[in-house]
Structures are given as structure tokens and as C-alpha cells.
Length: 245
Image 1 (tube, rainbow, N blue to C red):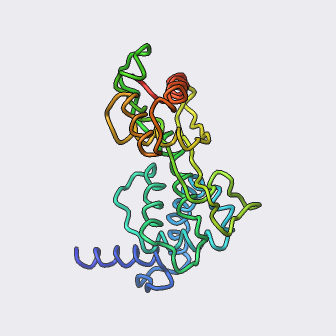
Image 2 (image 1 turned 30 degrees about the horizontal axis):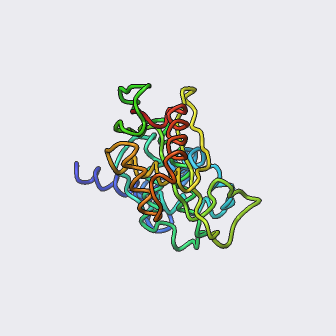
């Protein structure tokens, strides 16, 4: 009896996931199965539409529907949490999901950009204990866990149904995403030096002077040449709650 019930449940799950490629379980009328399909798939599609509204609008209803159907049928999520479905959808795209649909080349980066907002909003991380008056040059600097430097090949912050780029620009799109005291996620453009400095803060635990020294060596200038600009940048980032001593 157990084996029969188990097989019936698996048969129903396979059909609800992917009706075109799986036979329906025997003895259940199509109308009832359609209700289950709409209930389960509709919930997933609604969650993804809320997490990726720009992508949905840019792809159009037909291609978006096909992409979500492919995700629903083929991808095996690693968590049952609804709050993690955006991350699962991003992983699906990173693994090449939806390739048969011939998606635009910027889809993966746009998905990551939209996921960042949800990830920061839902993050349970908080800023570490810090000294607001610490020496930014000789003290060890810490990047807030709620501030993420981002770099994209495509101008993800500009993509919309009215602007669908066909070629990536020569310069990358450098952004800072941060969750502010107002509990909202804010995005801002970064100059190359600012992005390089924040990326260095992510990767290395050292003083502000050492970070600037590494950047100066990378671009082939004396650290003295960028020290005033670098210190002003660090002070500005501390005022924004991005960098701490």
C-alpha cells in the first residue's frame, strides 16, 4: 500500500512540475490536476515576478512564462524557504538554465542585480562594533556587511523595456548597494578608485594606508599622489556607514 501511494504522489508531482513530459496519475480528472498545477506554479511565478520585476518586464510575458516553467520543471531547489527562491532562481540561471530560450546576454547580470536588493533587505547581518573616530589611514578598516561593491559588464541599472542593449559598453558598471538606517536598499554609482578600494576592503584585513598603497602599486603611481583623494573617499564612506575602523 505504501509503495502504491508513494508512486501516486511522485507521479502527481512530476505531472504538476512538467505536464507536457509526464503522464498524469491515473484516476484523477484533468480539471482537478489543473487546479493543483495552477496553485503550485502560480505561487512560484508570483514570487519570482516580485523578485525580478525588471527582468519580467524586459523579457515579455511569453518568454518570462517559458523561463519560469523551465525553472519549475528542471531545477531542484536546495531549500524550502520562500525567501530563498530568488537565490535559487539566480543559481538556475548561473548553471545555464533557460539556455534553450535564447535569453538576452544581460539576463544573468540583471538577475544578480535584482537579487542583491532582496538579499540585503532580508539579511540578518549587522554592523560590527567599531570606533567612529578611528584613524582611517593607520587603523584597520572594516567594510559593513550591509554594503556590497558590485561590478557588471552590462548597465544593469539602466536596463528597462525601453532600453535593451545589444552590446556591452566599453566600461563596466560599478555600483555600491547598501542597506541604510531607513532599512531601504540604496544603489549608487562608483568611480573606479572607489570600487577598487571597496573590493580591497572585502578581500584584505589591513589599514587604510595599506589599502591605498596596494591600489597605487596596481595603477603604477606613488601612494602620495592618491593619498588625499583616498582619505577623503574613506571619510565619505564612513559618513555613509559603509566603512568602519
